[in-house]
Amino acid sequence: MINNQDKLVKLIEKERAVKLTKELIKFKTINPPGNERDCAEFIADNMRKLGLDVVLKEESKNRTNCVVTLKGSEQKPTLIYNGHIDVVPPGEGWSIDPFEGVVSNDKIHGRGASDMKSGIAAMMCAIEALVKADIKLRGNLIFTAVADEECLGPFGTDYLIREGLRGDMAIVGESTGLKIEIAERGILWTEITTIGRSAHGGRPWLGINAIYSMNKLITSLINYERQVLSKRTHPLVKSPTFNVGMIYGGEKINIVPNKCTIQLDRRLIPGESFESALKELNEIIEGLKKEDPNFQASIRVIGYANPYEISPNEPIVKAIERALISLNQQPELKGKDATTDGHILVNKAHIPTVIFGPGDESLAHTNYEYVEINKILIASKVYAIVALDLLG
Image: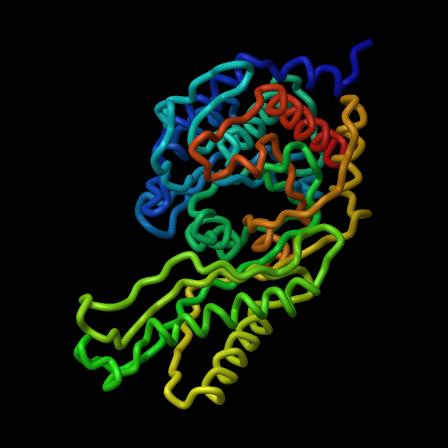
């Protein structure tokens, strides 16, 4: 006799997974500006064909989220599948059209292939299998294909949480290479501006060069990372880091610049918070002011996401481990050094959340991004088996 799990696994087909991933890649959901509506409607149309409850929700025009509900007989517990449909700009240097979804050597290539159109496709295939197998679930399964993750999610997962989305456990289908990620670093994004005094380039002694002031600050940040941040460790993620991602200053070659600005990316490990990281930045600046009375700087917070970790004994973690073992895969726990919408689900909605998906995080945001087709199939089978395990 074929059991329910065997039925599910057989219904998840390579041809369907490839087709969905390719179709999703073709939507140019570049964020900013996002424009996720067409992609969200494509997902909604596919889910409506299964007879499911589908709602499109948006807080801002064309920043569309698709919420799909497969209702259980008791409507509890609730498992959330979460994934984002926006992507970063493709950039230059591709050898293919990044929005074509080219299949080669058992891989699908293109922007979003790993991050994370393949994760969305895998979740869709899992839901299709659950419906076609006619398996009656006890709890609810909610699938959220969201906008705006690449800009910290105010129009996506954060919006849905503010609108009342709740669950008992969640899987974010971001790229993990089929590893089970139970911790995540956070982010503090700031804009720091040093203030100087303009003067003629031939008489620089009459001015205060804001770029030189910024040089002192950047040097202090590098030293602080080496001497302090690198000593803070966590078993699942890398130590905290700084990255100066942008810098601009000056008006003309023969003018002493009176302003210089950087945008700084500070990554946080579990146990830290954006407030503590911001306090440290202010202390570094105050130290430079004491050393040099001409040093002036201001900080503006652009955005933040606090880190998180969950227990390896959470039911959602154990269910994914069991599913992998049943598919002859070895479970491996780790953490994510980047940031996902998982932080919103955990920190704002208090939903135990695992990050698990088919993509390779080392390929995300590159100009040679791809995903292995076999991993899409395994991820999809895991999603389906976990739903059967926890809701069935």
